[in-house]
Length: 186
Ligand SMILES: [Zn+2]
Ligand SMILES: [Zn+2]
Image 1 (cartoon, rainbow, N blue to C red):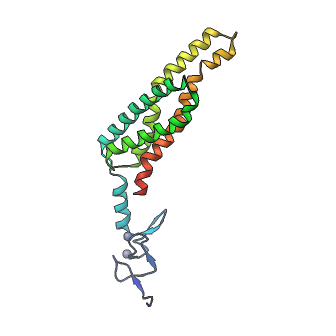
Image 2 (cartoon, rainbow, N blue to C red):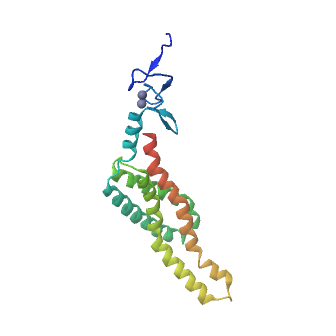
């Protein structure tokens, strides 16, 4: 095959060396759009944006409330479990995150946007806040009542709060990547 001169598919009179790296059609300099993955034609860039921002306003509401509710339940369950077997948090926190990410993803049926992914992560944190607030206040009260006489006991009173923080640190990225990552793979 001989390499013949390429002409822009929008402007057939303009010879060019560029091709859109998505649809492979030749494009001239004024038609090429620079993207992180290379030069693309305007049509492909527009099509891509449509795919990336498909979430409707109700998806934001659903994702936020589902994420926050499930995260609240997970943080309560974790509170119950860690008072018996503390190290289970390391296994259960990412598992909870993945499960919450999967369930919420199911609800939005493949629609997505960057803000929706961020909201998903935020809902995990907000859902665990009520439990953390109670534990923080409770812990502070216990600490106050022990006073300085028993520093070890007073530090232990903040233990449950610590497990909640570990839960958030592990579950939030797990939920976020589960929720957003699968869209990229598609
Ligand atoms: Zn293209
Ligand atoms: Zn052109």
